[in-house]
Image 1 (cartoon, rainbow, N blue to C red):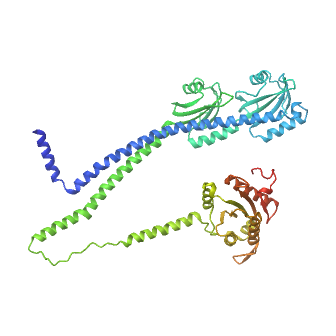
Image 2: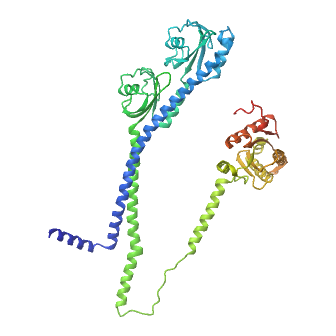
Image 3: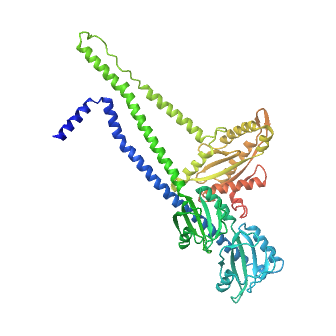
Length: 541
């Protein structure tokens, strides 16, 4: 009975609630699950941000380890190459040191090369060092014992006071015995540059520990702890026990950090990328607070909007309907009073659609057309190239790629100003468009660089490509009147064919660019095809 009375009382109270209040209550009940869902999603995002930070620190640490591995592999290749040089194998006075000095200058990671006899005595060096003996060094003894490539642990240079590693490769005689040992010093300049970049990307710290737990490098290092042994620190002990991984613990500065680490090959050293956990949580907590605030604002806005709309569109009409009903019930009712229909304007939708189409055309023009010359711009050119690469093989036709660079355009800008240069570029764009067939593609890549893609059906002669290129040069080289000035501009063209010069279209574009540079080097108004380049000229620039 008591429950029945409570239910009836609730029904009575609900019946007294107005229509607007009921609708607001229903809206709030409908929005509460959405608000809860948003909060749950933001909390999930918070956890995902932490996981992304964990993965990012590990990936960045792996990146440093890969960089070290690449440099060590390069050092190995260089040593193998140098062991084949007779002057170095024989440690010829003068010539050996000269060649080692040239090798040092050639490789930025190298601190120097040296040739030692099996007793560890220095025979020649790129640095003209004083006599020295390395027979007691672990890496030297290992190289003699294994007769193979070895790498030292990180060492501190006597002069530079900077950490480095030493790579050693024995030189074997005809009988297989070690007759010389070639050493190369590898510095950590790459690590300093990489550490600054990684620290900037992650907002954290990058540290390098040797296999004993001593800090060799750290970016940034506000505590000045480089060179100190941190082997007793709990985090460092955990790092030294594993090859790679992620640790959440107090960092060297006592701040809780997420640390990703990896082992550098050959040396046993560890590279550690660490970010403050509080920094990650602060950002996600701000997002959570912001998201909650936005949802609260949205709910309040919806409730307020519904309140107003109910008043304007529903309640006011209901009050009018109530007044009309009362009027109908009175003696004042006039059966001949006309009804006023609500006006309908279907043409407004058509106007909006027309405006959207016009806006789309305008945005398309801005996005894909070079406003100065009327040709396609670089974005459209790159999109066109992507479409060509995605075409099925049976639908692809051969394409001639013409890279064009203007000759003598910079002096026009320098002497007469950019306004005159723009006027000249506008005319050149018009001329270039007239030099190609319908269906071919011409674009301005930027500045005074242009590109033309010629479709070549089967049997299209190479002479036709030359004719188009020569026609472009003749057209561009014709006198130009810009701002009342007689301007003389020429152009050079590089040509590559796809797929005959390269099956990959991106590589064919690079080939055309190389041919253009060859044309520029050979003089103005030249056409050079990639197929004409020598092996030396065809090397990547």
